[in-house]
Length: 151
Image (tube, rainbow, N blue to C red; front, side, top):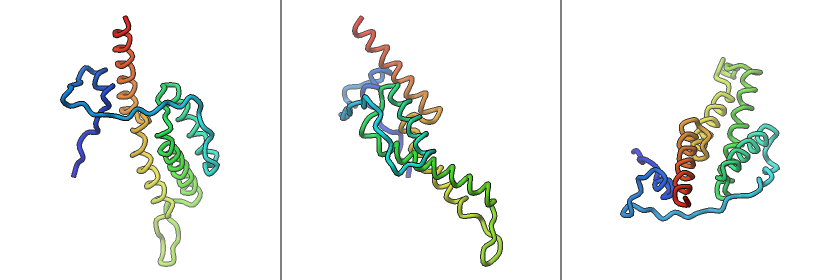
């Protein structure tokens, strides 16, 4: 059963010019993080690189929030796991010898599962081309509306 579209925050609706008072949704505003917190010790080197890349990108756009940090960390773990599984597949091959003959390497399933889970988190932070466009357009529209308000 499809869930339908995700609800847009009121600020974005105002920026787009589609806001209707009768459909207003009350959203909790979370504070933006001024400094990037250190990554969890459990992240490996690849995960740390991903962590700093993503958090820096979000901070530069003033959308890095404490409430999103657990999901960002999960994304970093998942991408790191996916890349590790891909390295193992290159070393061992897609097919390995099992006790009943050749079988698919278990790293194949690990890679697919990690990538699929990461792909479900990525749009929440604008980490896919389409979601990035939506976020950047919304931020740009919001800035334009704010400029018009103060002019």
